[in-house]
View (tube, rainbow, N blue to C red):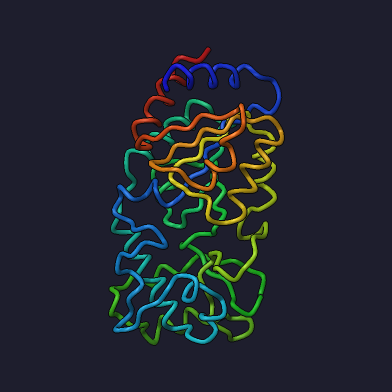
Length: 274
């Protein structure tokens, strides 16, 4: 594995065009920080005695019917994220960015802010993030979640002040998390759709870390990278949708090891580039 990685990385590093080192990360990279995956059967979908499937609960339609419930859950997730710490994989990526500088780009499906907290800066958050809110009625401005609004326990309801702060000052509708729900489409403003595809087009190598490719934009990013000649490195503990995409391609490397160990190897290889 190390020899093949060295060969690929050295080749891409010395290219003049389409030579970006791009990392695409998903929920798997945050699991060592104690954050459950979005679809996992892990108890976080319980609100009172009611059970939800993500595909039903995580929708704009459900939000419009049950806004306080969804916002309370979002603030529960806020507390979960704030109580978690970046893990070694996050820090390895931050160190790799320090070495590669503007040739490094990170595209993440995660909304947990752990990449930023670990020090990474060149980030495209294609599923949005939990730090921001926007009007559910379509007012254009994206705002930071007010600091006055704190994270909540799973059984803790919104306060009167929370409700005031989560009301759009322009039109009076509810504010909502600035994230992508299951019944929504990727766009540029929230999801960096076109920017991330442009990065993919100019990538010499795309490392896929801790994501199965269950949504359309991550797969499109991999397809675009392949189309323009990138090598895909699939770093996951088991086969996934990306594996199916690349299994018959020449420009690929499939690694079935934990991300921390592989990222450590990638970092060491980059240290020796010249």
